[in-house]
Image 1 (tube, one colour):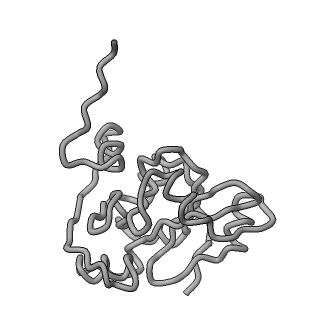
Image 2 (cartoon, rainbow, N blue to C red):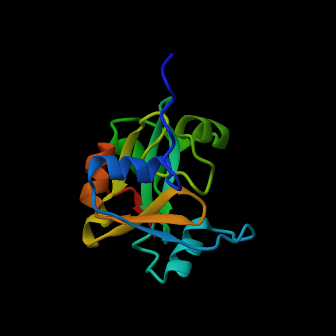
Length: 165
């Protein structure tokens, strides 16, 4: 009988994936406040990073297919632009339960990295304007900082203007 692989101590699927890929990254932890109205803005404030460098991971349904959108926490997702970026007609926000079940992460901690099922991913084009960006490391109160190019490479993401102010 085959042994189960041991889970890496203290790691999340996102940080395990980054380590396995040999990608340079920095983990930033902060004390998550459950009463915070915005996970992303809370992260930006706690880390002392501009909200346009902290990106939230949203899961949308584009023509019946779950799709990941990574946009700055300072703005919102343009669903029409997301659909267009992947050659779709219509996008709506995914059911939160379906998003959690498919990615393996809880809302507020969904990372574009290390998801249970790899989903089509679109990264807002503004990410390219920063030397590094921060995204969820797979749980509330934990962010990972890396280059947008590395994130796109690891997730097979396309860059497109999908964020709105």
